[in-house]
Length: 320
Ligand SMILES: NC(=O)c1ccc[n+]([C@@H]2O[C@H](COP(=O)([O-])OP(=O)(O)OC[C@H]3O[C@@H](n4cnc5c(N)ncnc54)[C@H](O)[C@@H]3O)[C@@H](O)[C@H]2O)c1
Image (cartoon, rainbow, N blue to C red):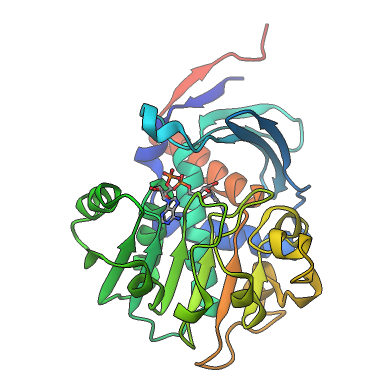
């Protein structure tokens, strides 16, 4: 039996944001209803970055993503985040596919934020602010425009040329470069920087804002002033990961915030166990650390659509 190899070029051809949104939301539903298993990710620290091992089981597929975060990479022409994923048959363990997961990571991260916005942002949200204009910013926008109709998408990055590159890459949408304060003063805000110190100040955040805090996904990272958490309804993807490595990790370590203040998980919103936003002036935050459930849901989707389209390279990886 062959194992299917999918390169980054293959996965980019197969990734369709509308379908990614559907399977990621279903992945959160399955996991929350007890039809999925996911231990927290394991981190391996190296001098210039880190690696994460991310296993999960969902109906149909088990798998493991091996992903890095090396913040100096853009200066040498490599992505900050790259990933490889093994997708297995859960019954026999057979490796069904091995695939590049660099763009799977970006698409599922964007999709997860947009799903959080669906439950937590005001329904009439018509402005989006993006802080940090790198690889993840692109898919945060791609995912949100599937669910919201924005009049303005305001982008800020410390490097104006990075903002300009992002604007050029999405010519069909009303995107503009903005100051950080203007970007924060949007209905939906996505923070996707590699910062380790807060970049969003409490005084800039308006009532009714929804923030997807995406960049802080390892110990010691944060993007929001902790007081923003204190005045908000905070939802996490996984409390075990968020407390150790998400937006709330530094405030918890410093004793400014407690994990008991977290309102709930995205899975609880998706399954209707808890309400999302309850009034128009509430400030809401989704603390995204990135969970393997998202990756395996998308990887299995790409595996099945590659089989249908006869794409990829079949190799006898295991058979002697
Ligand atoms: N939560 C998740 O599921 C998830 C998934 C993937 C990546 N991430 C994290 O998201 C972050 C961004 O990843 P990426 O692949 O887009 O990286 P990237 O290097 O492509 O882009 C990051 C951008 O942030 C900008 N930036 C850094 N500090 C800033 C600041 N103070 N203000 C404004 N802009 C600033 C940089 O100039 C850069 O353009 C990383 O920290 C990564 O670890 C999280």
